[in-house]
Length: 442
Image (tube, rainbow, N blue to C red; front, side, top):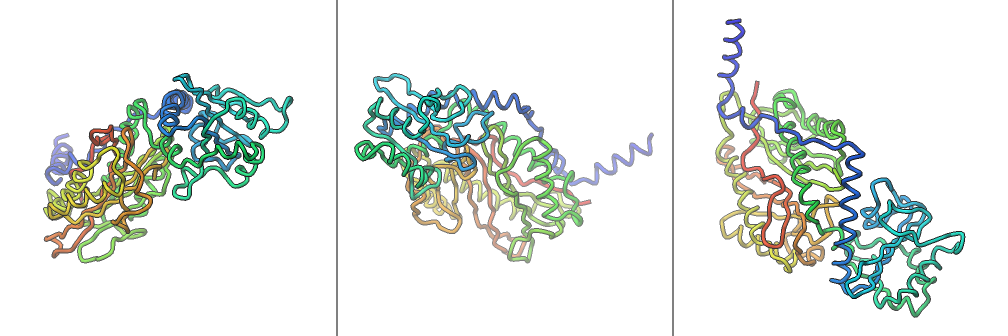
């Protein structure tokens, strides 16, 4: 017993000081089973349909909104409006929102052969009217809307769900006089997709926490053995972990290695070695919401207690660029204006920023204005939309920093954390990384 105790004590003494606290795995929040998830998703969807749709239709001055989808070719907006048991549009599914005015509730109708979980009132009886489009035209004439929105956009796919064939069918059924009331509103679909209600914001921190827990375990001795584990080993471990938890991911993870004396980050079958700086880009999908995160880790050399100061300073520089960006959020300004303001604030501090942040929510690269691109730090058409309150964001960016311990080698310290903007300030959903994950060497 004494000999075993002494061996364990020797192992603990041999660990670098401070390593234990930063390599301990984070606790995983509980994951709901599918029935419980469906109940949560449908509850949130109903609340969104009751509150968000009327608000954005009135914001846009729209009296009716017609959405058309076909099975396995869904409008991006329609897909987010299907209940938890309707995994795809059935045959052709047409959704109609009609605002009667005077503050009365907005009508929700489905002109389709099948219902939609009680969230939309059935509005078509094929036995009485076999022609689906004639039924749509009758609904329009009966309600006499002045402006009828359809999803069509050259700028964003999220607002471009009206196909050419659906347009031809719809306008053919309506006739010229009613067709003149159709408006291609590319903002209305974006406002639906980008707006987050309080119930979603209440859920989002645990979804972010799941992502952080997977990254923390991936960047730990539980997964990485320096000198043996490859970058791809970590990537596929992450994919397996997501599946084992009953979750899904919207993109294949990335793991890259920055190494002293090597100009280009290493990936694939490169073996992780002591002294490497690791980076990952990782996200999950859960309860219809997505995450998108990038974090960094350092593999301690034998005898090291901490990462070199130059690497720690590099992460701190990236944190300062984050602060410049989140401190520049204002409602009403465009993504391009936000990019320019944040870059100026970061450069004034002597930083070398590259900002490429984006909305997140129902989609990983979500609907709404972009805030720069990694290959374009100038105004871009995709950044011309306005910043709104109650929106979620991936604060994605990098700071290039010269590492003295690596002979002044410049490294791009890439970070990404998910947050939400309430109209006054940006709050990280589950905090952000301010210290490198540390991975001890054997």
